[in-house]
Image 1 (cartoon, rainbow, N blue to C red):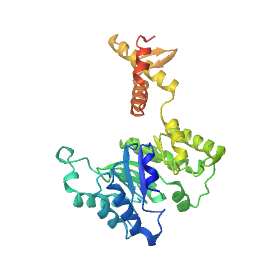
Image 2: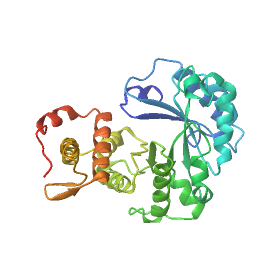
Image 3: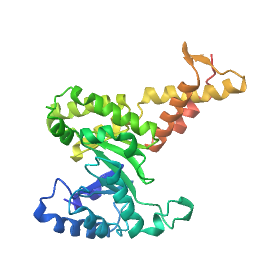
Image 4: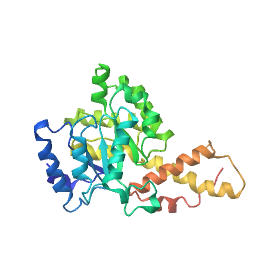
Length: 300
């Protein structure tokens, strides 16, 4: 299974030591992942992560102690984060094992620090979101774990996902409020057949509409659909490029608000356009050609 991951082209590739590993095989799994992370880095993945066991278990410290020296490890995914103390524990271990990379001062580090992603899985975590977001300088985002959240609240998951609306909105809002770059939506458990992939696409559109900028995948067949859904669409990107080009000219003319195709354009709209273009560039979309095509765009 580990070898199969080498060919995937994904933003973040996560190896799991928690729920997918039975208690009796935790040690074996940890050794396997450590050995794997000492091999050549997968070329198609921008970020390599490991989901450790929950801080409340007896496995978490051993997971960290053994894996943190892995040369290809970028991120630790921390499950069942119920309070800020869970992230503070992991942060303290990072600072103890890799002090040169976790000084608290980026200009003093010898290499980029290991980042943290926190899994939000309970009602308690939801009430502590603001404190969790401020718990570690290495926290880079939140992930919504819907199945454990449903278990905690005795919810039944439905295709509409309305039972998770408050939780998903809260998580996305907290990430934005605390300027965390990664806001990762729930797993789509349907991944086989036309209906499964259709549901995945619907969930992606829903999550993007709530403010999420990514989604967990559990099968390679989900990757292309998720990447396409969260990347800017052609019409969306074209509109954003036109706004950016016209705005430069509007500023030169001393105009704070103007129109394009009969729609009012002001600072928030321009900011959104810049964000869309930046995301497209991060997705390796050919933005330069669009800019060339619309270089003569004028504000109305």
